[in-house]
Image (cartoon, rainbow, N blue to C red; front, side, top):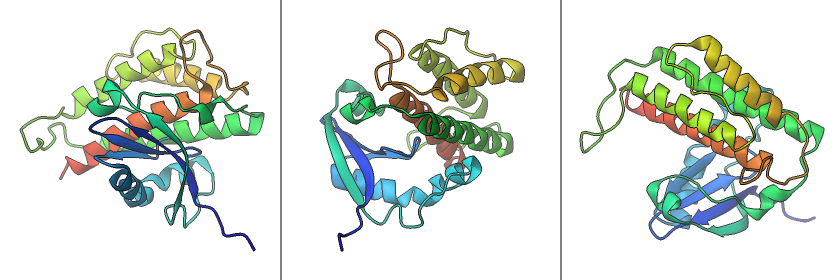
Amino acid sequence: MAAARGTKVYVEAGSKRVFACAVDWPGWCRSARSEELALQALAEYAPRYAPVPERAGVRFPARAAGSFDVAERVTGDASTDFGVPGRVPEIDAGRVTPAAARRLASLVTAAWEVFDEVAAGAPEELRKGPRGGGRDRDKMIDHVLGAEAAYARKIGIRMRPPALGDRAAVEELREAIRQVLARPSDGEPLVERGWPARYAARRIAWHVLDHAWEMVDRST
């Protein structure tokens, strides 16, 4: 009997920072100074990520972090070293079926729900980082909303960043993103100089969850 394969990931390696991202689980992506440490961090964050698929109604294997299968290695750039997974892997060029598209949209939606829940319970002033840096809650929320408006342009959506506290505008932007991600696609970028659907879902969910988890860690 063939041995069970691990969770499929790709690795994006810059000169100073390396990201390990789960191919089929948008938002489950961590970084460190080496591939080994990035994979270790990815495994450690599995329990924090698990509520996302649970909310989406998608089964998250109990042993998802037990082992990883590195399907692709991508050469990073300045964005990688700055702390952003910025390269689109070739693995994202695959066709997105109707079922896969619905799954992507549901996982991104669940990531938004986790972020909103964390933000609602976080104090306005967050604990500062080791060097006194870091955004407080409202500035972090505003940053995430602004980034989402920028990311949306990569999939053909042009909308103004929602103002902080304007729930109607937030939902309008998110619904537009959700509708695009929920449509099947051929794996090509959705607009010229844009992103394919799989990468867009992963990048949006990563950014949302990265700041949600930061907010949790800096609330104590």
